[in-house]
Length: 458
Image 1: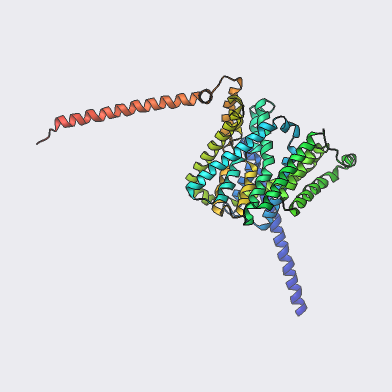
Image 2: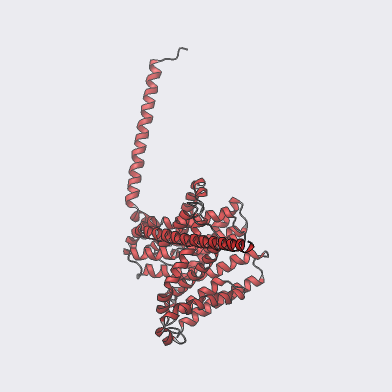
Protein backbone atom coordinates (compact mmCIF):
# COMPACT_ATOMS: atom_id res chain seq x y z
CA UNK A 1 0.00 0.00 0.00
CA UNK A 2 2.84 2.37 0.87
CA UNK A 3 4.46 1.62 -2.48
CA UNK A 4 1.28 2.63 -4.31
CA UNK A 5 1.08 5.86 -2.34
CA UNK A 6 4.71 6.68 -3.11
CA UNK A 7 4.14 5.85 -6.76
CA UNK A 8 1.04 8.07 -6.92
CA UNK A 9 2.90 10.87 -5.13
CA UNK A 10 5.82 10.57 -7.56
CA UNK A 11 3.42 10.52 -10.52
CA UNK A 12 1.68 13.65 -9.23
CA UNK A 13 4.99 15.44 -8.80
CA UNK A 14 6.09 14.55 -12.32
CA UNK A 15 2.72 15.59 -13.72
CA UNK A 16 2.93 18.92 -11.88
CA UNK A 17 6.42 19.57 -13.28
CA UNK A 18 5.16 18.74 -16.77
CA UNK A 19 2.31 21.22 -16.32
CA UNK A 20 4.74 23.84 -15.01
CA UNK A 21 7.09 23.17 -17.90
CA UNK A 22 4.19 23.42 -20.33
CA UNK A 23 3.16 26.73 -18.78
CA UNK A 24 6.72 28.08 -19.05
CA UNK A 25 6.84 27.21 -22.75
CA UNK A 26 3.46 28.86 -23.29
CA UNK A 27 4.66 31.97 -21.47
CA UNK A 28 7.81 32.10 -23.59
CA UNK A 29 5.71 31.76 -26.76
CA UNK A 30 3.42 34.60 -25.65
CA UNK A 31 6.32 36.86 -24.70
CA UNK A 32 8.22 36.36 -27.95
CA UNK A 33 5.08 36.80 -30.06
CA UNK A 34 4.03 40.02 -28.32
CA UNK A 35 7.60 41.38 -28.47
CA UNK A 36 7.75 40.62 -32.20
CA UNK A 37 4.39 42.27 -32.88
CA UNK A 38 5.27 45.34 -30.84
CA UNK A 39 8.67 45.61 -32.52
CA UNK A 40 7.12 45.36 -36.00
CA UNK A 41 4.37 47.81 -35.07
CA UNK A 42 6.77 50.45 -33.77
CA UNK A 43 9.02 49.96 -36.80
CA UNK A 44 6.07 50.67 -39.08
CA UNK A 45 5.49 53.88 -37.09
CA UNK A 46 9.11 54.92 -37.80
CA UNK A 47 10.19 54.14 -34.24
CA UNK A 48 13.18 52.04 -33.15
CA UNK A 49 12.19 48.40 -32.62
CA UNK A 50 13.67 48.50 -29.12
CA UNK A 51 10.87 50.89 -28.13
CA UNK A 52 8.45 48.15 -29.18
CA UNK A 53 10.17 45.72 -26.85
CA UNK A 54 9.72 48.17 -23.97
CA UNK A 55 6.03 48.48 -24.89
CA UNK A 56 5.78 44.67 -24.91
CA UNK A 57 7.20 44.57 -21.38
CA UNK A 58 4.64 47.17 -20.27
CA UNK A 59 1.78 45.19 -21.81
CA UNK A 60 2.89 41.84 -20.40
CA UNK A 61 4.20 43.02 -17.04
CA UNK A 62 2.58 43.83 -13.69
CA UNK A 63 1.48 47.22 -15.00
CA UNK A 64 -0.39 45.58 -17.90
CA UNK A 65 -1.98 42.14 -18.13
CA UNK A 66 0.37 40.65 -15.52
CA UNK A 67 1.37 37.68 -17.70
CA UNK A 68 5.08 38.04 -16.91
CA UNK A 69 6.57 38.71 -13.49
CA UNK A 70 9.81 40.62 -12.96
CA UNK A 71 11.61 37.52 -11.68
CA UNK A 72 15.25 36.80 -10.95
CA UNK A 73 15.59 34.84 -14.20
CA UNK A 74 14.48 37.92 -16.14
CA UNK A 75 17.10 40.00 -14.28
CA UNK A 76 19.82 37.46 -15.11
CA UNK A 77 18.95 37.45 -18.80
CA UNK A 78 18.75 41.24 -18.75
CA UNK A 79 22.28 41.44 -17.34
CA UNK A 80 23.48 39.18 -20.14
CA UNK A 81 21.63 41.50 -22.52
CA UNK A 82 23.57 44.46 -21.15
CA UNK A 83 26.86 42.67 -21.77
CA UNK A 84 25.84 41.79 -25.31
CA UNK A 85 24.61 45.34 -25.94
CA UNK A 86 27.99 46.75 -24.90
CA UNK A 87 29.76 44.04 -26.90
CA UNK A 88 27.74 45.01 -29.97
CA UNK A 89 28.34 48.74 -29.48
CA UNK A 90 32.06 48.08 -29.15
CA UNK A 91 32.10 46.14 -32.42
CA UNK A 92 30.26 48.95 -34.21
CA UNK A 93 32.77 51.65 -33.22
CA UNK A 94 35.30 52.69 -35.84
CA UNK A 95 38.60 54.07 -34.60
CA UNK A 96 39.23 55.90 -37.88
CA UNK A 97 35.88 57.69 -37.76
CA UNK A 98 36.56 58.74 -34.20
CA UNK A 99 40.15 59.89 -34.76
CA UNK A 100 39.04 62.23 -37.53
CA UNK A 101 37.13 64.38 -35.02
CA UNK A 102 38.46 63.13 -31.69
CA UNK A 103 39.41 66.53 -30.24
CA UNK A 104 36.03 68.13 -30.88
CA UNK A 105 34.20 64.93 -29.87
CA UNK A 106 36.01 64.54 -26.54
CA UNK A 107 35.67 68.21 -25.64
CA UNK A 108 31.99 68.12 -26.61
CA UNK A 109 31.34 65.11 -24.38
CA UNK A 110 33.22 66.67 -21.47
CA UNK A 111 31.16 69.82 -21.92
CA UNK A 112 27.91 67.83 -22.14
CA UNK A 113 28.70 65.89 -18.98
CA UNK A 114 29.83 68.99 -17.07
CA UNK A 115 26.80 71.09 -18.04
CA UNK A 116 24.40 68.21 -17.39
CA UNK A 117 25.89 67.76 -13.93
CA UNK A 118 25.57 71.51 -13.30
CA UNK A 119 21.89 71.50 -14.31
CA UNK A 120 21.02 68.43 -12.21
CA UNK A 121 23.03 69.78 -9.26
CA UNK A 122 20.98 72.99 -9.41
CA UNK A 123 17.78 70.95 -9.64
CA UNK A 124 18.99 68.84 -6.73
CA UNK A 125 19.52 71.90 -4.57
CA UNK A 126 15.99 73.10 -5.30
CA UNK A 127 14.41 69.67 -4.78
CA UNK A 128 16.59 68.63 -1.83
CA UNK A 129 18.28 65.69 -3.57
CA UNK A 130 21.40 64.06 -2.15
CA UNK A 131 24.58 64.58 -4.14
CA UNK A 132 24.64 60.98 -5.42
CA UNK A 133 21.19 61.31 -7.01
CA UNK A 134 22.13 64.56 -8.74
CA UNK A 135 25.27 62.95 -10.14
CA UNK A 136 23.44 59.87 -11.44
CA UNK A 137 20.73 61.98 -13.09
CA UNK A 138 23.43 64.18 -14.61
CA UNK A 139 25.07 61.13 -16.17
CA UNK A 140 21.68 59.90 -17.44
CA UNK A 141 20.94 63.23 -19.12
CA UNK A 142 24.42 63.52 -20.67
CA UNK A 143 24.17 60.37 -22.82
CA UNK A 144 22.33 60.35 -26.16
CA UNK A 145 20.48 57.61 -28.01
CA UNK A 146 22.88 56.15 -30.59
CA UNK A 147 20.23 54.05 -32.39
CA UNK A 148 17.77 56.97 -32.61
CA UNK A 149 20.47 59.41 -33.75
CA UNK A 150 21.77 57.15 -36.51
CA UNK A 151 18.21 56.56 -37.73
CA UNK A 152 17.63 60.32 -37.91
CA UNK A 153 20.88 60.87 -39.81
CA UNK A 154 19.92 58.19 -42.32
CA UNK A 155 16.41 59.62 -42.81
CA UNK A 156 17.65 63.13 -43.58
CA UNK A 157 20.57 61.88 -45.73
CA UNK A 158 23.27 63.33 -43.46
CA UNK A 159 25.01 60.14 -42.35
CA UNK A 160 28.02 60.65 -44.64
CA UNK A 161 28.22 64.46 -44.45
CA UNK A 162 30.07 66.80 -42.09
CA UNK A 163 27.03 66.94 -39.80
CA UNK A 164 26.89 63.16 -39.68
CA UNK A 165 30.63 62.91 -39.15
CA UNK A 166 30.66 65.18 -36.11
CA UNK A 167 27.50 63.59 -34.70
CA UNK A 168 28.89 60.06 -35.01
CA UNK A 169 32.18 61.19 -33.48
CA UNK A 170 30.42 62.63 -30.43
CA UNK A 171 28.27 59.50 -30.08
CA UNK A 172 31.39 57.31 -30.15
CA UNK A 173 32.99 59.51 -27.49
CA UNK A 174 29.83 59.18 -25.37
CA UNK A 175 29.94 55.40 -25.70
CA UNK A 176 33.58 55.44 -24.60
CA UNK A 177 32.70 57.74 -21.69
CA UNK A 178 29.92 55.42 -20.54
CA UNK A 179 32.38 53.00 -18.97
CA UNK A 180 34.00 55.60 -16.64
CA UNK A 181 30.54 56.97 -15.80
CA UNK A 182 29.39 53.48 -14.84
CA UNK A 183 32.50 52.95 -12.72
CA UNK A 184 31.91 56.25 -10.91
CA UNK A 185 28.27 55.34 -10.29
CA UNK A 186 29.16 51.93 -8.89
CA UNK A 187 31.97 53.47 -6.85
CA UNK A 188 29.56 55.81 -5.09
CA UNK A 189 27.82 52.74 -3.66
CA UNK A 190 30.90 51.66 -1.69
CA UNK A 191 29.85 53.83 1.24
CA UNK A 192 33.12 55.76 1.34
CA UNK A 193 32.53 57.78 -1.83
CA UNK A 194 35.16 58.09 -4.55
CA UNK A 195 38.11 56.97 -2.46
CA UNK A 196 41.63 56.31 -3.70
CA UNK A 197 40.81 52.75 -4.80
CA UNK A 198 37.87 53.89 -6.92
CA UNK A 199 39.90 56.71 -8.45
CA UNK A 200 42.71 54.25 -9.25
CA UNK A 201 40.27 51.90 -10.98
CA UNK A 202 38.79 54.80 -12.91
CA UNK A 203 42.21 56.01 -13.99
CA UNK A 204 43.13 52.47 -15.02
CA UNK A 205 39.99 52.09 -17.10
CA UNK A 206 40.52 55.44 -18.85
CA UNK A 207 44.19 54.61 -19.48
CA UNK A 208 43.21 51.21 -20.88
CA UNK A 209 40.69 52.80 -23.24
CA UNK A 210 43.15 55.48 -24.37
CA UNK A 211 45.91 52.91 -24.85
CA UNK A 212 43.61 50.63 -26.83
CA UNK A 213 42.51 53.48 -29.11
CA UNK A 214 46.15 54.45 -29.67
CA UNK A 215 47.14 50.85 -30.34
CA UNK A 216 44.32 50.31 -32.83
CA UNK A 217 45.08 53.57 -34.62
CA UNK A 218 48.65 52.45 -35.34
CA UNK A 219 47.59 49.58 -37.63
CA UNK A 220 44.94 48.78 -40.18
CA UNK A 221 43.30 45.79 -38.51
CA UNK A 222 44.12 43.36 -35.73
CA UNK A 223 44.72 39.87 -37.08
CA UNK A 224 42.53 37.32 -35.33
CA UNK A 225 44.49 34.15 -34.39
CA UNK A 226 43.46 31.15 -36.50
CA UNK A 227 41.34 33.47 -38.62
CA UNK A 228 41.36 31.19 -41.65
CA UNK A 229 40.23 28.23 -39.53
CA UNK A 230 37.30 30.28 -38.17
CA UNK A 231 36.32 31.29 -41.70
CA UNK A 232 36.16 27.65 -42.71
CA UNK A 233 34.20 26.67 -39.58
CA UNK A 234 31.42 29.24 -39.28
CA UNK A 235 29.53 27.22 -36.69
CA UNK A 236 32.23 27.89 -34.10
CA UNK A 237 32.31 31.68 -34.60
CA UNK A 238 29.27 32.54 -32.40
CA UNK A 239 30.63 30.46 -29.53
CA UNK A 240 34.11 31.99 -29.90
CA UNK A 241 32.70 35.53 -29.90
CA UNK A 242 30.54 34.83 -26.83
CA UNK A 243 33.53 33.25 -25.08
CA UNK A 244 35.61 36.37 -25.77
CA UNK A 245 32.83 38.66 -24.50
CA UNK A 246 32.12 36.78 -21.28
CA UNK A 247 35.80 36.00 -20.58
CA UNK A 248 36.77 39.66 -20.80
CA UNK A 249 33.71 40.59 -18.73
CA UNK A 250 34.66 38.06 -16.05
CA UNK A 251 38.30 39.23 -16.08
CA UNK A 252 37.45 42.89 -15.53
CA UNK A 253 34.87 41.88 -12.94
CA UNK A 254 37.52 39.99 -10.97
CA UNK A 255 39.79 43.04 -11.20
CA UNK A 256 37.02 45.10 -9.61
CA UNK A 257 36.38 47.31 -12.64
CA UNK A 258 33.07 46.28 -14.23
CA UNK A 259 31.84 43.33 -16.24
CA UNK A 260 30.30 45.81 -18.70
CA UNK A 261 33.74 47.36 -19.23
CA UNK A 262 35.21 44.00 -20.22
CA UNK A 263 32.36 43.26 -22.65
CA UNK A 264 32.83 46.67 -24.27
CA UNK A 265 36.62 46.21 -24.59
CA UNK A 266 36.12 42.76 -26.15
CA UNK A 267 33.70 44.16 -28.73
CA UNK A 268 35.93 47.15 -29.44
CA UNK A 269 38.93 44.92 -30.12
CA UNK A 270 36.96 42.48 -32.26
CA UNK A 271 35.27 45.31 -34.16
CA UNK A 272 38.64 46.67 -35.27
CA UNK A 273 40.00 43.30 -36.34
CA UNK A 274 39.81 41.35 -39.59
CA UNK A 275 37.12 39.16 -38.03
CA UNK A 276 34.63 42.00 -37.52
CA UNK A 277 32.29 41.21 -40.43
CA UNK A 278 32.18 37.50 -39.70
CA UNK A 279 31.63 38.05 -35.98
CA UNK A 280 28.84 40.56 -36.49
CA UNK A 281 27.03 38.24 -38.87
CA UNK A 282 27.44 35.21 -36.61
CA UNK A 283 26.53 36.79 -33.25
CA UNK A 284 23.79 39.17 -34.37
CA UNK A 285 20.89 36.71 -33.76
CA UNK A 286 22.10 35.95 -30.23
CA UNK A 287 22.63 39.62 -29.52
CA UNK A 288 19.17 40.45 -30.82
CA UNK A 289 17.49 37.94 -28.49
CA UNK A 290 19.38 39.07 -25.38
CA UNK A 291 18.88 42.75 -26.19
CA UNK A 292 15.15 42.07 -26.59
CA UNK A 293 15.15 40.52 -23.10
CA UNK A 294 16.99 43.54 -21.70
CA UNK A 295 14.53 46.08 -23.07
CA UNK A 296 11.61 43.79 -22.23
CA UNK A 297 12.80 43.82 -18.61
CA UNK A 298 12.82 47.63 -18.76
CA UNK A 299 9.17 47.54 -19.82
CA UNK A 300 8.33 45.22 -16.93
CA UNK A 301 9.54 47.91 -14.52
CA UNK A 302 7.25 50.64 -15.86
CA UNK A 303 4.12 51.03 -13.78
CA UNK A 304 1.26 52.49 -15.81
CA UNK A 305 -0.57 53.47 -12.62
CA UNK A 306 2.43 55.55 -11.54
CA UNK A 307 2.68 57.15 -15.00
CA UNK A 308 -1.01 58.06 -14.99
CA UNK A 309 -0.91 59.42 -11.44
CA UNK A 310 2.17 61.54 -12.25
CA UNK A 311 1.43 62.26 -15.92
CA UNK A 312 1.92 66.02 -15.63
CA UNK A 313 5.22 65.64 -13.80
CA UNK A 314 6.47 63.04 -16.29
CA UNK A 315 5.58 65.12 -19.37
CA UNK A 316 7.02 68.30 -17.86
CA UNK A 317 10.28 66.55 -16.96
CA UNK A 318 10.44 65.02 -20.44
CA UNK A 319 10.04 68.44 -22.04
CA UNK A 320 12.59 70.09 -19.76
CA UNK A 321 15.17 67.31 -20.14
CA UNK A 322 14.85 67.22 -23.92
CA UNK A 323 15.02 70.99 -24.35
CA UNK A 324 17.91 71.37 -21.89
CA UNK A 325 19.80 68.47 -23.44
CA UNK A 326 19.36 69.83 -26.98
CA UNK A 327 20.43 73.31 -25.85
CA UNK A 328 23.55 71.86 -24.17
CA UNK A 329 24.42 69.90 -27.31
CA UNK A 330 23.96 72.84 -29.67
CA UNK A 331 25.74 75.32 -27.42
CA UNK A 332 28.70 73.02 -26.76
CA UNK A 333 29.26 72.25 -30.44
CA UNK A 334 29.00 75.91 -31.43
CA UNK A 335 31.44 76.99 -28.70
CA UNK A 336 33.88 74.40 -30.10
CA UNK A 337 33.83 76.12 -33.47
CA UNK A 338 31.06 74.28 -35.30
CA UNK A 339 28.87 76.67 -37.34
CA UNK A 340 25.19 76.97 -36.50
CA UNK A 341 24.17 75.06 -39.64
CA UNK A 342 25.97 71.97 -38.29
CA UNK A 343 25.61 72.53 -34.54
CA UNK A 344 21.82 72.87 -34.76
CA UNK A 345 20.93 69.62 -36.52
CA UNK A 346 23.61 67.64 -34.64
CA UNK A 347 22.41 68.96 -31.28
CA UNK A 348 18.77 68.24 -32.03
CA UNK A 349 19.55 64.75 -33.34
CA UNK A 350 21.34 63.96 -30.07
CA UNK A 351 18.42 65.33 -28.04
CA UNK A 352 16.95 61.96 -27.02
CA UNK A 353 18.28 60.07 -24.02
CA UNK A 354 20.55 57.07 -24.55
CA UNK A 355 20.33 53.31 -24.34
CA UNK A 356 23.00 53.31 -21.65
CA UNK A 357 20.93 55.73 -19.57
CA UNK A 358 18.87 52.67 -18.60
CA UNK A 359 22.00 50.94 -17.34
CA UNK A 360 23.10 54.00 -15.36
CA UNK A 361 19.62 54.30 -13.84
CA UNK A 362 19.73 50.64 -12.79
CA UNK A 363 23.21 51.16 -11.32
CA UNK A 364 21.92 54.18 -9.40
CA UNK A 365 19.07 52.09 -8.02
CA UNK A 366 21.43 49.30 -6.99
CA UNK A 367 23.57 51.68 -4.89
CA UNK A 368 20.44 53.40 -3.46
CA UNK A 369 21.35 56.74 -5.07
CA UNK A 370 17.90 56.60 -6.68
CA UNK A 371 14.86 55.32 -4.84
CA UNK A 372 12.36 53.05 -6.64
CA UNK A 373 10.08 56.00 -7.40
CA UNK A 374 12.96 58.00 -8.85
CA UNK A 375 14.02 55.00 -10.91
CA UNK A 376 10.46 54.63 -12.18
CA UNK A 377 10.48 58.29 -13.20
CA UNK A 378 13.88 57.98 -14.94
CA UNK A 379 12.94 54.85 -16.89
CA UNK A 380 9.62 56.36 -17.95
CA UNK A 381 11.21 59.59 -19.18
CA UNK A 382 13.91 57.71 -21.11
CA UNK A 383 11.32 55.50 -22.83
CA UNK A 384 9.08 58.47 -23.65
CA UNK A 385 12.04 60.38 -25.09
CA UNK A 386 12.35 57.63 -27.69
CA UNK A 387 8.63 57.63 -28.34
CA UNK A 388 8.89 61.37 -29.02
CA UNK A 389 11.71 60.84 -31.53
CA UNK A 390 9.44 61.54 -34.59
CA UNK A 391 8.99 65.11 -33.36
CA UNK A 392 12.73 65.51 -33.09
CA UNK A 393 13.18 63.84 -36.47
CA UNK A 394 10.89 66.50 -37.95
CA UNK A 395 12.99 69.18 -36.26
CA UNK A 396 16.17 67.58 -37.60
CA UNK A 397 14.75 67.59 -41.13
CA UNK A 398 13.94 71.28 -40.77
CA UNK A 399 17.41 72.07 -39.48
CA UNK A 400 18.77 70.13 -42.42
CA UNK A 401 17.79 73.13 -44.55
CA UNK A 402 20.43 75.14 -42.69
CA UNK A 403 23.19 73.14 -44.38
CA UNK A 404 23.26 75.77 -47.12
CA UNK A 405 24.77 78.13 -44.56
CA UNK A 406 22.24 80.97 -44.82
CA UNK A 407 21.76 81.32 -41.07
CA UNK A 408 24.46 83.11 -39.16
CA UNK A 409 22.90 83.39 -35.74
CA UNK A 410 20.65 81.55 -33.33
CA UNK A 411 17.72 83.90 -34.00
CA UNK A 412 18.15 83.60 -37.75
CA UNK A 413 18.28 79.79 -37.51
CA UNK A 414 15.07 79.65 -35.49
CA UNK A 415 13.32 82.05 -37.87
CA UNK A 416 14.38 80.01 -40.89
CA UNK A 417 13.46 76.64 -39.43
CA UNK A 418 10.23 77.56 -37.67
CA UNK A 419 9.24 80.57 -39.79
CA UNK A 420 5.86 79.09 -40.72
CA UNK A 421 4.95 78.23 -37.13
CA UNK A 422 6.17 81.61 -35.87
CA UNK A 423 4.01 83.38 -38.46
CA UNK A 424 0.97 81.33 -37.46
CA UNK A 425 1.57 82.05 -33.78
CA UNK A 426 1.98 85.77 -34.50
CA UNK A 427 -1.22 85.88 -36.56
CA UNK A 428 -3.09 83.96 -33.87
CA UNK A 429 -1.74 86.29 -31.19
CA UNK A 430 -2.72 89.39 -33.17
CA UNK A 431 -6.20 88.01 -33.84
CA UNK A 432 -6.61 87.11 -30.18
CA UNK A 433 -5.48 90.58 -29.08
CA UNK A 434 -7.86 92.28 -31.51
CA UNK A 435 -10.69 90.10 -30.27
CA UNK A 436 -9.76 90.84 -26.66
CA UNK A 437 -9.66 94.62 -27.35
CA UNK A 438 -13.02 94.45 -29.12
CA UNK A 439 -14.47 92.50 -26.20
CA UNK A 440 -13.15 95.00 -23.68
CA UNK A 441 -14.52 97.90 -25.72
CA UNK A 442 -17.92 96.21 -25.98
CA UNK A 443 -18.02 95.63 -22.22
CA UNK A 444 -17.13 99.27 -21.60
CA UNK A 445 -19.85 100.51 -23.97
CA UNK A 446 -22.41 98.25 -22.33
CA UNK A 447 -21.30 99.46 -18.90
CA UNK A 448 -21.60 103.05 -20.09
CA UNK A 449 -25.11 102.49 -21.38
CA UNK A 450 -26.16 100.84 -18.15
CA UNK A 451 -24.77 103.78 -16.24
CA UNK A 452 -26.75 106.20 -18.43
CA UNK A 453 -30.01 104.27 -18.22
CA UNK A 454 -29.66 103.70 -14.46
CA UNK A 455 -28.35 106.92 -12.91
CA UNK A 456 -27.19 106.93 -9.35
CA UNK A 457 -30.20 107.78 -7.16
CA UNK A 458 -27.94 109.72 -4.80
